Amino acid sequence: MHQAPVKVLLAAAVVAAVLVLAASAEGITLQNKHGFKVVLTPTGATIQKLFVPSCKGKHRLVNVVLGYENATGYALDPHPNFGATVGRVANRIANASFSLDGKAYTLQANDGSSSLHGGAVPWAKAAWRGSASRDGLSATFEYTSLDGEAGFPGTVAAKVVYSIPAAGSSLAINMSATSDKATPLSIINHAYFNLKGAGNGDILDHIVQLSAHHYTPAAEGTLVPSGMVAPVAGSPYDFTKPKSVRHDLLRANGGAIRGYDTNFVLPPPTGTSTKAPEWWAPGVNPQAAHDAPTRPLAWAATVTEPRSGMRLRMLTNAPGMQLYTGNSLDGKQPGPGVVDAAAAHHGQAAAHAGAYYQRYSGLCLEAQAFPNAINTPGFPSSVLRPGQAFSNRVTYEFSCA
Ligand SMILES: *[C@@H]1O[C@H](CO)[C@@H](O)[C@H](O)[C@H]1NC(C)=O
Ligand SMILES: *[C@@H]1O[C@H](CO)[C@@H](O)[C@H](O)[C@H]1NC(C)=O
Ligand SMILES: *[C@@H]1O[C@H](CO)[C@@H](O)[C@H](O)[C@H]1NC(C)=O
Image (tube, rainbow, N blue to C red; front, top):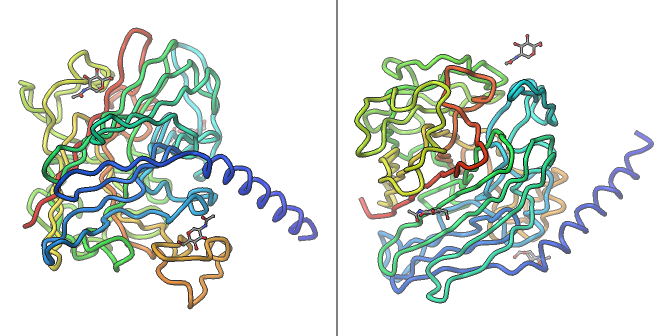
């Protein structure tokens, strides 16, 4: 208790230091002639805002991703990875440890006894090197993760390319990496969508349809998969027909709080001859396959918001997809127009202070390797070896329903 002021001072100093770094980095905006616009920030190679032409009012743009107004928010610790590139390994590694090629590795436990979203050195907070293309339609971010960073083996060269078409509303994300030693790797984007507009209520009436006929059941509380691949039929995880998020929400395992925080097993990409879920063999890494960087993407999800009429389709080459319904958002994350981020961080969600992101105010569709794959021999492998190229490609397409 007596040490609290010291801790607060230290925390403030750390936040200030991060702020200086983040504030000095320049954002990149991609925009096409239809008004579709993506605002990117180098801290975490993050999607800060994503403006889609409204389906209701002409010439109106709606920002459909949760995020902060400026660097103040992104320096919050923790911030829930709004729009960020997450690595080296997204999602959970049980017991914050793994062994690879006979060697044991220990990571930081930051989610109970698990390591979550990169552990001690989250790529979501790293300063990426960013550059925009001449035509303003794509941006490249690069990050070098050194051997031993956060406890992982190998130096990893990671790259994220965001691109939009000259016409139309879609965002392609091409995440790639190479490593000089074998390492587990799963780079993802952690955008939270709200098709009514960020900060404009919850996503419970969004209608979701998924391609997945299988999911990976996880332990209550820890959300670590049991290692089984189970059919969705008859469970709250059955989104094979369109269904509102609300419909079975309270029966879904969201960890400490009810909601979805679930890995779905995606069917094979177009052109793959084998049937779901066997297009990957246990222990084979489909994201390190030679054709992964260029093969056609498979449809994974469609989300429709009835009142705004906005529709989002997601395609990917990844074997898994986490549906997360923002269960842990707690009203302490300041949304658009909020001035006093520091007060919000300390739980003083002042009534005068505009929008805050409450529970279920956004949903994530995270294309990924399966959670805890490195400790689960029956899952597709998440190991990247020297000479291989990791690939996670995602397209988010917007239209009017
Ligand atoms: C965590 O470690 C304990 C003790 O070694 C082990 O019994 C347990 O199976 C591990 N949990 C997971 C999810 O790997
Ligand atoms: C994705 O990026 C990788 C690595 O830069 C590249 O080889 C591949 O061609 C890209 N794929 C697409 C579809 O742009
Ligand atoms: C962050 O954004 C808020 C709201 O737009 C603004 O009031 C505040 O001054 C900004 N802070 C910094 C450090 O730019």
